[in-house]
Length: 286
Picture 1 (cartoon, one colour):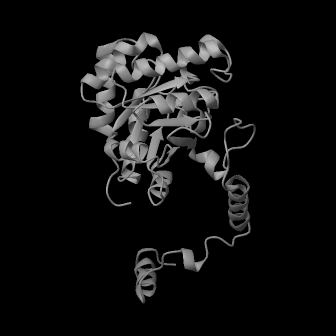
Picture 2: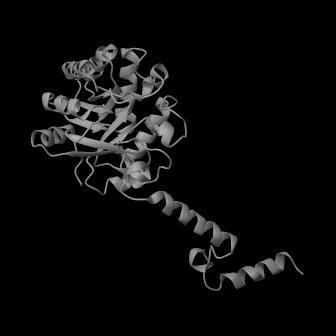
């Protein structure tokens, strides 16, 4: 892909029922590889707090950290539609703060859209950011930033009553200016209803096959994560063991004195070593 993908392209894909492939990644190197594929969207998620920094939740991600890694991803993937995740307390404290922080993602990091974990309490924030000319992806269903309130996550909208509430919330988000939805950890039947009813692209994360697009984190796609993974995660390679093997091979070559060899070393120009020897002889006579 040479031309940058825009929200107009994503809307066209929805109208034509072409699926949207999205990934979450957090660094320049991975983004540059994603940029060489058919993936249309990158979300720089606050899950970087867990995947990159090793925390047990997304809450420690800060605005400065998120802006820095989003800018790195944009440099690596200049052609992909780029969404930046609004971290914890970047929008909850009021509309003015939300506008300031959302604007940073566009002006400092090159993002084209910001994602906000959206409950009904933040409809005015969604509207304010959208009215300011900033595209918003409303994140509904499982909302990781609410972990301290609910304690543990479970699939959303598995009962009719909760499903109806989530469908209504999705419509409220659209009515208040959301340009896209991300539905996480939600019953597939409900995600399908929302996708059919909403005119904007709906990206699913563990919400069944009927959404307009799907998203996984890059380490899961590559098989780099170890330990338990969410039910919806799928690995398309097994790079974790291959990475361990590569580092182990490197360590053994260093320990055995086989790396670096002449091929991986710089050398003086022809004849310069002899000149250096004469210079050293004059300065440090034996």
